[in-house]
Amino acid sequence: MTSYEILSSILGVRLGYVREKGHGKKPPKKSQIKQANIEASVSLAVESMRQEMQLDIERKLQEEREQITADLKKICIKICKRNWKRNVNT
Image 1 (cartoon, rainbow, N blue to C red):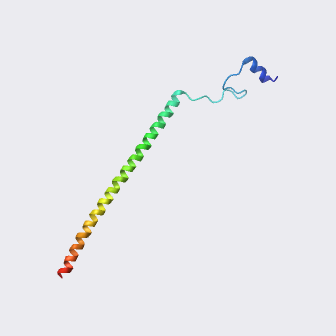
Image 2: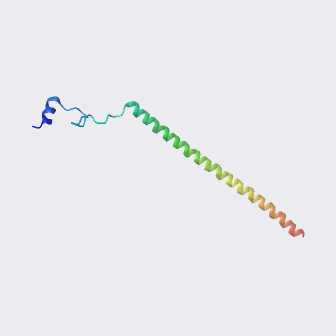
């Protein structure tokens, strides 16, 4: 029987303990887990809002582009009509 087996049989085995290495890394506290969960939730909410705002901005820009295009077409038609009338009258 090895010395480790003898010690284990007499003292028992402690969970999370490695001989000559100690207890190792401690698990995170509940408050740390809650904080990490809160941070993850906030991060997801912020990302969702960012995407929603980005889509809204893109939609508004597209509407403005369409309006500008329509206005330019009206202006071009007016100019063409004026030039045509001038050419017809001369």
